[in-house]
Length: 460
Image 1 (spheres, rainbow, N blue to C red):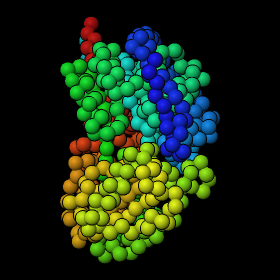
Image 2 (image 1 turned 180 degrees about the vertical axis):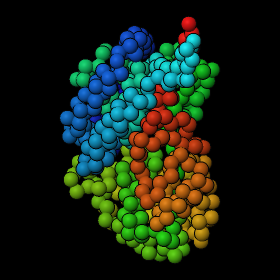
Image 3 (image 1 turned 135 degrees about the vertical axis):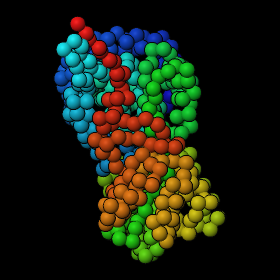
Image 4 (image 1 turned 60 degrees about the vertical axis):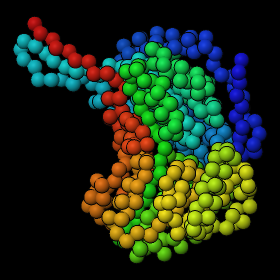
């Protein structure tokens, strides 16, 4: 039986080892999921909601141990990892709370002779493909609403964070979820593609790279099933002349470097009005220097390693290329002794004198680096923010809500923030445009993606 190893970025040693699913195991789990789903959709919505809430509580009860596992598997500082389980709970509880209203029948005006209604029916088996960077926060986006809507779920976790699937499975067992409704499979890419092509799968929720999203689309071609893709980002921020500078600096530094910059909606490029540029850059650089890079299990560490040395080297190359093209690196790597060449430990970097000819301002970095550009006007800022193949989120820092709305309407992005960034509100649709994906998760709109409308025309 083929196996894979989890190499921890903390110490570059094996942290766990698991076996890939065999064809027979996959067949058995698909069969179990189909049988369980048929009965599950008949269970009262209140019962489905209650079980999902119990599973959420079971995860919260173990958040300390789970947080340590997250840190070992992907490198996030332990002081922040528990927050991911709290975020799971926030999103899960919101989707439970709105389910009754959003999954109820849609009554159409009827006559004495005929009644009409539209009922939302579950799709069947949902395949949820989860990344390593936020393995619980991305999982909850599809798993909880899919189960509440009456579907069964098969989770395919990242091979970097496989323990997350086991913990979620255990939480549902504790909550009394009937067998077969939530299962997980450890699979390589070829096996995953084969599974998507199976007639048993009725919906695919994928979070990952644009390349991975393209592979999902190819695998699902001709199946006539819906897919939800949350892909990469090159998320911009614009600091206007009327912005609260201290708030913008503090929030954007955090939005840039939290999770070592390994966030789909993390800040990767910043445009600052010329009247604020120098003061913003000085404050941003000074605050960046306060980070402590090191062992994520230590309580004073605020910046952990990237997930792999390969990922860190990609960012190093972007920085080196930008500097060779004229960018100015403002952070001396010697301030961060843990940063080492060809390792997952990488010092944060702030680049000035950048432009859009540089990869660091065009291509996804997914690491602790940001470029800051000066702009002369709102119009120039909007043009540069839209000059990207991505469109996940964008943030505008201003004192005027009207201006934020007006500029936001011009931005090619799934979410527009005013005076905040790197955040997901479960009441709002999470979606991207261009190479950032298709479809949406969370909010009331998620239930439309995870159900099929069925019309009833009932006459005497």
